[in-house]
Length: 201
Ligand SMILES: [Zn+2]
Image (tube, rainbow, N blue to C red; front, side, top):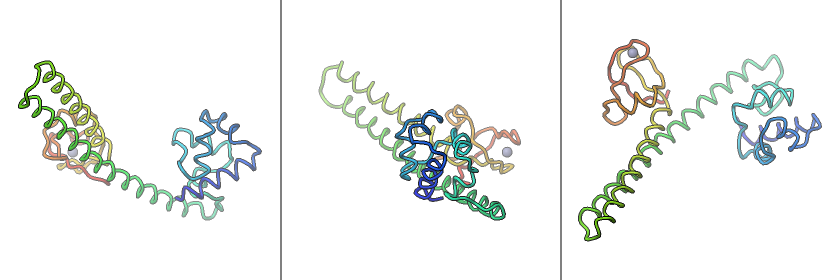
């Protein structure tokens, strides 16, 4: 999957259909800038409009992701290659997100601790202490809830009993006992409450 090739392909198919960037944008309900970004290989069309885009350009989704017209006889092979590539991209993205979770969790915790320390030990008006504690708590709550949201959605949790892999709800992640990213949750498949490990695939 090559974003530049995909962009060129979208551009050439659009011209074949006699559409301007703004006409295509209008048909899809997106901005001209979005279309221009796809065509320059800067971003990919959102998955929610891909079907529509392919219909308008008269190409298959397989062709869109390949960035070229595909012969019928090769389509199965190309489809498999595209699926593999997408799986690889998702895994990479999930790993990156999980690194980000650490960064967000770490920075918000440290900020919280510093503010609480300052509010407790440095001479200042009581109202300032309260303000610092409130700010610290808000940063902490905001940071941790975002970090948890990332942990919930990136990759999967694997049940230690039946090895079922799934994405749990936010609240079951939030309220579960945990050691690092391993969490005690109820498995939706075997219904047992046990430890679930975070896995990428
Ligand atoms: Zn299970």
